[in-house]
Amino acid sequence: MPSSVLHSDTKKERRYHGIPASRGIVFGKAKVIHNDLISEYEEHISSNQIPFELNRFAQAVQKSEQQFNNIIQLSKNEFPSMSHILETYSMILSDSFMHEAIRNKIKEGYSAENAIFHNFNAQKHFFLLTKDPILSERAVDFDHVSSQLLSALRKKTISHEVDEQSIVFATSITPADIMTFKQEHCKGFVTEIGGIASHASILARSLSMTSIIGINDIVHKVKTGDSIIIDGNEGLVIVNPTKKTQSTYHKKTEREAKLREELGELSHIASDTKRGTHITISANIDSISDIEEAIGNGAQGIGLLRTEFQIARYGRIPDEQTQVDWYSSCAQKVYPEWCTIRVFDIGSDKFAEGLPSESNPALGVRGIRYLLKRKDVLKTQMRAILKASSSKNIKLMLPMITNVSEVLQAKEVFEECRQELTNEGIRFDQFMPFGIMIETPAAGLEIRSFFKHCDFFSIGTNDLTQYLLAADRINEHVAEIYDIFHPAVFGFIRKIVKVCKTAGKDVSICGEIAGFPDATNKLIHMGIRNISISPPLIAGIKNKVINNTKD
Image (cartoon, rainbow, N blue to C red):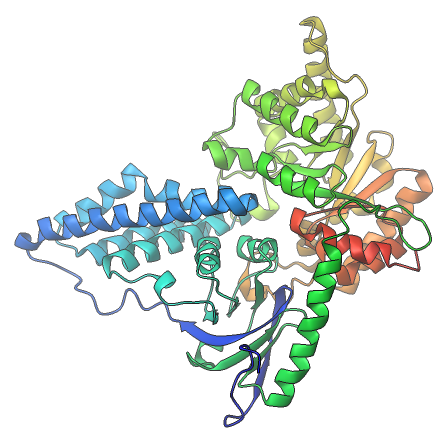
């Protein structure tokens, strides 16, 4: 009998449905994780306990730094695409101002646990109140770092709680949790909250770790030790499966294993449909290290270079030469294929001196709106992109466009940069393609007005979906509304593609929808011929393409 067969006929089988976040079928034992680290601790201490508590805090920081560094090194060596996110935890943990604030609280008579909890809770709520999508993600980062410190204080870590048979059930999961689970060979996870486009869900897909999100109160419906099957293809959790259910799912996993073996041989096969239509499959890239993985998986260039992640890496906007070096390296690695560079897609939360605070930054100053208020930032980046373009395989793309005037203002800055570099005697691509992201309903509805100003278009489905459905894509409380497969989303994409095709304009698609095999045939049938996705997903999408018979 296979080791993954679970003895559970003595208990009644139960099924719970959630949202598929990462595909696959796995068998295992439930490990329910409750966030109870802050319970049962001393709130206040006497003056003679202060030195002891200060020492406990210092040791917890040291231990946590070591654990984070181990996880970061693993991500850089094996899963580089998300290492920049994990480095954020280390940056938070090493913040000297945070250390001083917590030490001061301890000196005032707070226990180490109480000081950590209150300091990080205040930071978390500050970020949540901004309502900015980027900052809201950072709120979860603070939550995790505080949990790590509290774990270190209690000499208790998640890594000691899971093993190769574990399927984790938790209220929420962070990227660092996932890397820890991967180290322990954990089979998958199920959460109550989370979004399909969250960093944790994206990382789970990158690591091929089966996961399901959005099952309300699941941590109280499952017990540690329960036999579990999770079907990440259907979003189904089966508790205490019968022998008949186990047999059915073992057959499914055998079919999937055979398919994965076949996919590994596709990297050098052309991505053509059965009718001979070529579909260009390029990669969404955050860092240089992503490119090697993308090329190995058969990517045809970079469809989206997310430059804002360099800000997270350096903790500031990189200077012109740093940007030149990075863009040049990316373009050279994929030459002669295209490298499409999107200018910084950042909001008013970062590097926005002089801008007023906003009650709803997700609908406020972000993307091109921010850059047009900080033309110095835009100009530096455009100069760098032009300087890196001597290989003539770079495209420049603007994010978060709503109207033509934004494109015209950006092109004025672009022309200034071109003129300056010409006067300085610096070579660059005089005919660099200039395009925009279609992420707002307004840009999609008025796309014809952009034709004479833009060479190409890329449909950014993550933001487009949240604006079409009025559902924040990182807000777990509306995760069931944020549906990338909603008919309105596909209908909108279809209209954009039809208009562009009639006008002879290049249009591609990126975002999470492009990485789901179930969507591939629909997108091809609509007329999509260029898809940009995360590097680990390329083989699966190529398999769908070469087996498509109805383009």
